[in-house]
Length: 499
Image (cartoon, rainbow, N blue to C red; front, side):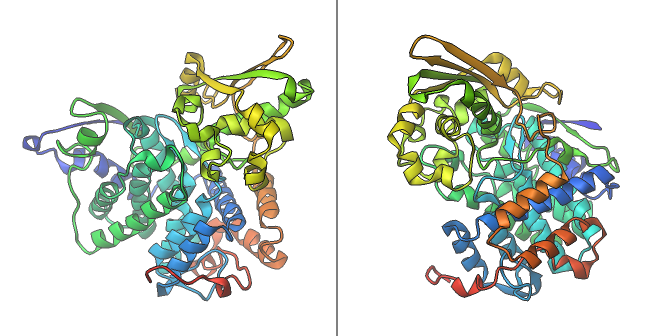
C-alpha cells in the first residue's frame, strides 16, 4: 500500500501531474492488477444484488421515468436495460442512467461507511453498460468493478464530503471514470483527465438528503455515472481536465472541503497490488439506510421482551455522531417525524424505522413505508417517543479502521410506564460479515429470488443467475445477457417530458 499525502498547492507551485491524487487514482486503474478469487466472487454477488433491487423497483415512478428517458437514445452496439428486451440497445450513458436509478431507488444495495458515506454498487451499472457497448469480457468487467470499488472506498475512508454539505456522488464520479479506464485499458493520462472532469461536474450539495428528501436521491448516482461516462468519452478524444482538481488553490479541497490548510493521507494499493476494497463493503438485508440495519435487527430482538408497546414511555438510542446527525433527531429535520413524509425521508428516519420494526417484528421494502402504515395512530405515538443521542464510544467505533471494532449500531434504552428499563445493544447488522448471519452467495441468491418473484419469469430468473454466478468466465458475447427481461415492460413506457 502507499500513503499519498494530499494538500492544497498554489498555482505557483506547479504541482507535477504525477504527484496529484487524480494521477495516483489513474495509475491504480491502469495497473492491470490481478483479481483475487474472493474479490471476483464478491463482484458476482454484488451484480446479483444490484439486479435484485432493480427488479423490485421497475414499476416505481422514478425508475419508469428514467427508463422512458433512456429509451429515446438507441445505439449500436449499445447496452441493455433492466426489464427491456435484450435487442433493445441504448447509448451506454443512458443505459447506465436507467439502470442506476433502478438499482438505487429502494436504498437496498451495498454500502461503505467511514469518513464519508458511499454506495459502491452504484459503479456497476455504468461499467456493465460500457462493457456491453465495447464488447468486453466478464473477466475484464469483474476487474474493472474491483478497481471502481477500490477508488470509491479509498476516497471515502479519508475524505469527508458530508461535513461540508457535499453529496457523496463526488467520490462516485471519479470511481466510475477510473473503473471505465481499467475496463477499456486506457492510458494513465487519459484516465487522469477523465477522473478530473468527472469530479469537477459531480460536486453537488447534500440538500438532496436533507429535510423532505425527494426522488432525486435515486437519480443522483445515476447522474454521476452518466456524466462520468461522458467524461471518459471526451478524454479519449484528447480533451483535458481542470487541474490539479483536488489540490488546486481553487480546487475541490480548497473551496468545498477542508480549505487551504487541509491535509489528507489517502491510502491506495501500490501499482499492481490487488484491489480488495470490495471485501470491506457490506450489503443490506433490509431496505433502509445502512446505519438503520443493525438497529432494525435490534428492534426485532427487543420486541419479545416488551409486551404491550403502549406501555413504553421513552426510547433513547445511543449511537454514533453520523447516525445521530444523518438519520436521528440530531439532524433537526422535523420531516423525519412527519407521517406524511416521503418514502425517501422515512428511509432516513431511525425514529420511524425503529418504531415500525418494534411493532411488526420485520422490515419490508414496500409495506413498511406505505402511507397508511406511517399514518397509524399507535405508530405515530411510539415513533414520537424515540430520540437519538450521540455517544463518543459509538462514534469512535464507527470511524475505527479495525474491522473487528468498526460498528454501525447502537444501544437502545427503553423506559416503560412503570419505570422498568429495558436495554440492549447491537454493533453490526445480522447480515454483516461479523454479524449473526453473514451474507454469503446463498443469501444473495435468495434475495434475488424473493425480490424478482412475480416480476421476472422463472426461466429468465434462472438464466440470469446461471450467467451471473460465472460472470468472471463469460466471454463478450455472453455479457449482453447480464440483464433480465420482463415481457410487456417497454409497451408501458409513458409519454410526456421534453424528448
